[in-house]
Image (cartoon, rainbow, N blue to C red; front, side, top):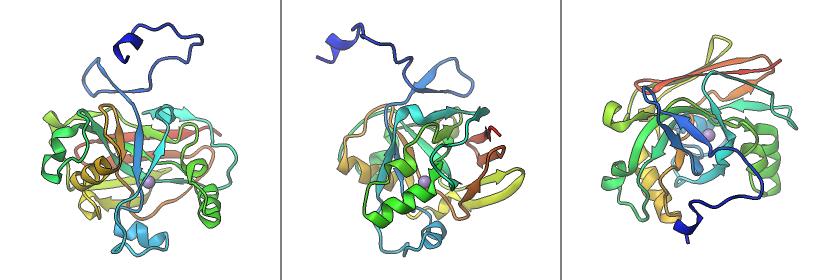
Length: 236
Ligand code: MN
């Protein structure tokens, strides 16, 4: 059936598949699904009022078409009075699988990028309070900026190194990849027990402490050592 659908003609045009550029290449990486890890740095778990020692990793999703290309200027999110930045290492899955062992997990990684898990914190907070899903706090238009990806064959698998974001030139979040509670291998192993990972999936791997508000006109500059630099500007 999958093969039968390769050359299908659609009744409406929804544009090209969401994708990300690959640094130094004409080829692009097709984005299938976006999984995000919650509270994966101890300091951030604490700032959100949780005990970082007791919780196994948990996941939420954003739609693939919430991807925003690097160096974009985007409109300010609607329906919110509190938009927060969360700078994150992004893992791009090249090979799918389920029940992946921790020690085999990096074989499934195609490469890495630098992303922002933009969050309508007020809507997320209201959802938490009401015991409802987080989607409207996390899964909105243009909520997943990401750099061009760099292949693991070139940069290896970054497990330590600075991760930070500046807002209008001021450092707001600063941490190190080594502070992740669940490292990339463990995240892949865990996630692959809950769903079958597919090639094209992205994993946003959590954010260090210092999340905070952004406003119309703000310029966000994110960085992960050895991976890349992300710049996103919100329109006034
Ligand atoms: Mn996040």
